[in-house]
Amino acid sequence: MRTSEFNKLAREQLRPLLPDFALATGLLFEVPIADLLRGLTFQGSSYDQTSFFLVAFVQPLYIPSDEVVPTFGKRSPRFPATDALDDIESFVTGAGRTFLEQLATPVDFANWLEREERGHRPDPFALEALACSRLLAGQAPVARRWLDLAAESAAGYIRRDIEEGLYAENEEHPLLSVLERTAHLRDALILSAEDALAVLERWRQETASHLGLSQHLEPARTRASR
Image (cartoon, rainbow, N blue to C red; front, top):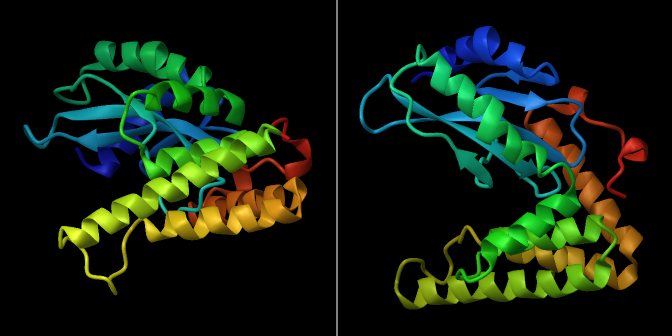
């Protein structure tokens, strides 16, 4: 499936089912956007060029990114082609919509992350998102603990990868960004929770700008998550 095919499907078939959503290239998303980008995108299939998956996902804009990252989401069954409309609409109005509706705020997102991560090997990216979500929920002491765990987990992965020869000592590791961001937030929290929240607000606006979605972003003063 090509992006142009998803755009056509979203414009002609999915958008009427989701009146509160807007369309961008390769993305159908709820507007206005507060802290969480909530929407639908697609993934191609290895079976052939016509089959694909839809992904209902939530991306916290307060975690810096320059691209849509549907890591936290629910994937549909594989659709053979864009003309499988009954099955596609069933996912969009059923499991996909339900997933998005239950994750409306950073509090919802944090609670979901805690359930998802329980019993799994620590994921530094998920722990960072959990920490920032708890901070936005007004739970600074809890957020501080999750920041420490995210940094500890990231440092452990980096150390292991170097020991196993996957990365050299002087090589840029993907998890260094987690270490840098968690350190920055912990330093801000030493000053005050308000300083740390200001960092998250700056990241929210920067991520929206990088994704080309600034015009759909709620102003900070109207957001309920604070």
